[in-house]
Amino acid sequence: MNTASFPHGIMFHHFWDHRHPAGQGAIGADDLVRLLRYLGPARILKAEDWLERAVAGRLEPHHLCLTFDDALLCQYDVALPVLDDFGLTAFWFIYSSVFEGQLRKMEVYRYLRTVAYPTVDDFYAHFEEVLGGSRYGDMAAQATAGFDPRRYLAEFPFYTDADRRFRFLRDRVLGHDPFEEIMDILVERAGLQAERLRHLLWMEDAHLKGLDDRGHVLGLHSYTHFTTLGEMSYAEQQREYLTNRRHLIAVTGHVPRAMAHPCNSYNQDTVAILDELGVEIGFRSNMVGAQGSRFELPRQDHALVMAEMEDR
Ligand SMILES: [Zn+2]
Image (cartoon, rainbow, N blue to C red; front, side):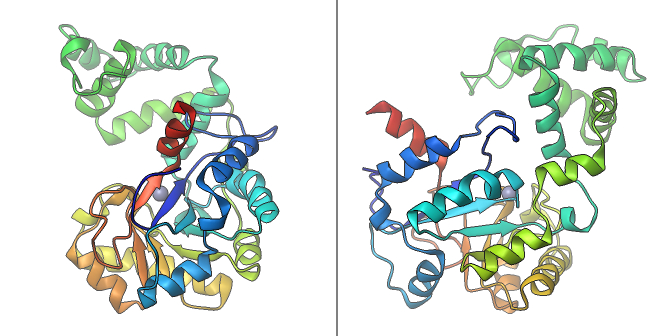
């Protein structure tokens, strides 16, 4: 039994099957079945029921709901049939920029690492090779000359030395744009094409419409999925959620009532904006602040539930 003594969501991201490669953290249909049985299907509410109860203050401590973030096609292909078997519906938190022609690079890079390299160390090796030959090569060589992996990100014991070196290069040496420049070279060399990836990685409007028609609840997740949304100005955040909302209304014909904070990043402005837009509940992406407002409902990452399950 999952031991938290307050109602919460279970948060899912990646799934694998014959079509969707098994990247880091991805689970298969059988894992999901085991997980739902472990949690106890009887305490998992359908999304609409959860929403009504949350608004009315009638959620009970043992109640759970299922949530899927980022509009990933693997969720639709792998998880939805399992939900159908259990007679369950879920929340699906959608960021809209990918539906309007923009790919989210982080998701593309994850796919690249998964399909183009036998191991993550092979990926790191190729990354450094391309970096070394780029206009950032000398700078990177100088910056890493005295690098001691034991002293970087020491608070994360599970990182390998290679993980630490890669993160140091990405976050401290290169920074956002140069990092993407190098990664885009790797994407191109792997022969991956943006348009094909869009159809492989993300759902289309028709999938969203199908979910809505079948009683699932689509919710806001910002437009671009910036990782630090809560640090943006009021006007920028408002634009993020307004454009996200416009897309979902165009697809479903009704106003979205739920949302989840991308990367758990929000502030008081976010809450005011959501209230203004008629959003009724919002989810965090962790179990901290379980007694927060209706815009801060707690969620447990599925990986933590899996780990607890495997421990038994
Ligand atoms: Zn997300």
